Structures are given as C-alpha cells and as structure tokens.
Image (tube, rainbow, N blue to C red; front, side, top):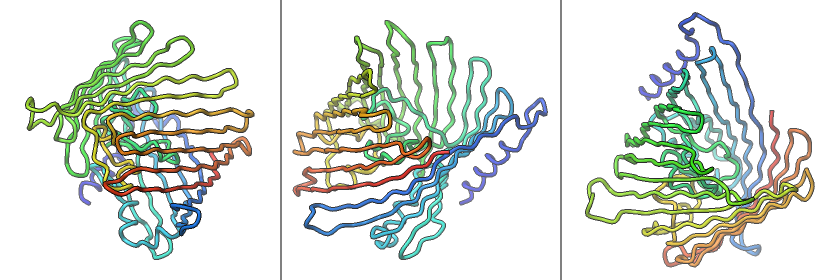
Length: 384
C-alpha cells in the first residue's frame, strides 16, 4: 500500500508540475468507450448455462505540457453481474489481481450479486527531446511483430481470446528509446512486477531490404536469459512477419537447451478490405496444459505461449459491406488433440456505435480429460 501511494503521488506531481519554461498545460485530450457485453458459457446446448453481464467504461486522459513533455492516465471501470460473481471471493480476486509492481486495481464494491472494479493500466510520464525519448510509469511496451503469438513481447504477453481488451496490459517500467535515423531505433527497458521480479532488456530495430528487422536480448522475470529476433515486411501483395526467442534459465546456463519459440505468418488485405491471416509456431518445450484457465487467461509469459510443439492459426474476415464484417478464425494444437474455432459478426450501427456477436469454441485435452467449452458474447460498444 505504501509504495502504491508513493507511486500515485509521484505521477500526480508529474501531472501538475510546470515545465522548465514555466509553461502551462498546452492541451488535454479525453477519449474512451462504453460497452455492454452479455456472456454465456456452456459445454453443450443440453447442459447448464452460466451467464454474465459486463458494463465496461474506459477513459483515456492525455496532457501535453509542452512540445517535449506528455503525461497520460488511462483506466477502466467494470461492473460485473451474473453467475460468475456469485462464486464469491475466488472470482473477485481474479478480477482485482494486478500483476504490476504497484497494485492499481481496486474492487470498489464486491457483493453477492455484483462486482465493481477500477483498474489503471496506463499511468506514465514521457519526455521526448530530439532523438531521445524516456517514458516512466505504467505503459505498454510492444516488441511483437506478428499478430497472434508474440515470443518477442517479453514485457506484455497477452491472450488472443480477450477480444474485449484491445489496449492490452501495461508494465510498471522505465523505457529509453533512441532514434539514430528515421528507420532505426535502440531501446532499453526495465520492468518490475508484483512478485518483485525484474525484466530488463534491450532491442535494436532497423530497416533493410524493405524489412523492419529487430534483435533483442535481456533478462526475464528474474529467471531467464532471452535472445530474440523479429521481422516484418512483404512478399508481393502479402505481409510477411515472424519472431523467434530463446529462453534459458539463468541458473542452468549453459547446461540445458532452454525453450525455443519460433513463429511466422502472412496476411493480406484485399481490395474490398477483406483480410486473410495465417500463422504457425514451433516450440521445443511446450507448457503442460492442466486446466482450461491456463489456456484461456492472459497471465502467461512470452515463454509460455505454446501448448503443442506445433501450433497453427488461420482467419478470414469478409467485408460483406462497408458496415458489416464476417470473420471465421481457428487454431490447431496437435499434441493435445485440440482446436479452437471462432466465428464472429461485427456491424456498425452508427458512426460511434458498434455491434458484435462472437462465439468461441474450444475442444482439447487438459491433462487426461477432454474439455469442451463454448463462450458466446453479445456486445454493444459506444466510442467517444
């Protein structure tokens, strides 16, 4: 609690402090959205159904002190009602869990029939001078190049299935970026989490042969050495992307092979704005899957993305009209005899109002048991 208060006071001071030139805040922006999403969970149509409703409000504040100094505070307020809330403390603890160094998630009201949570996932101060940029606070550090699995994304691994959280989690970190040229960048970042584990790494990105290429190295979760590379470019009309990372426990170095993840994919946007995507991944030491929560949740590290030595993903979005998108996506996990199928419909009802209908079907072995789970989502989203 003490370090949370110290951190929030520091960020507040950064918001109100004047620049060296004693300039006032030049510009403040606010945007966000409100969604209402109904969720149903079942294993078969003949079995019992679990229902949940989520009202989700996100607010993004950004203040531009001058041309070089920017501050940001972004948070989401969520109201949960339904069967899952009635599970009691176990569910409220999952919702209120904050993996950052500073706990900035509060279960404001937790009752038998509803739960209200507020979480800050962005709270940072940014200084940008010429070719140098420094960012301090809770921020998104995105080093991924591919679209589904990102073994280079060592600071902010996330779940593909959490489609309602497009911003992705943030890290409590310090980040230094240097831009030697318009097409190159060098980065150093240090992150601390709720277990006081440290992730520290450096990255260098440049453009060659029409490709953005990057190399990274560092120390992950006070446990592993990591070395990785990634790229993104095009072959003809297709975008071609890939990433690879090698994780080696520090205490076992160099006496074990470690964990190797390599992934590559291609995607194409057609003339009618339809989109096709393909991605495959290889891992020499996939994570053993013992329960569905491990598979579905977004709490895994970049080292633990694979549950099968080979994994495959494909999706196609048909832009039926300028207002209507129909999508089908799927994943295949041969080692656990599992797959995911996910059709969805997205329709623009008005300029800032969208409707989504999503179905996620999972069929896989978890341990020695077969798990079949369906999740259906009906969402209205208003953006401002």
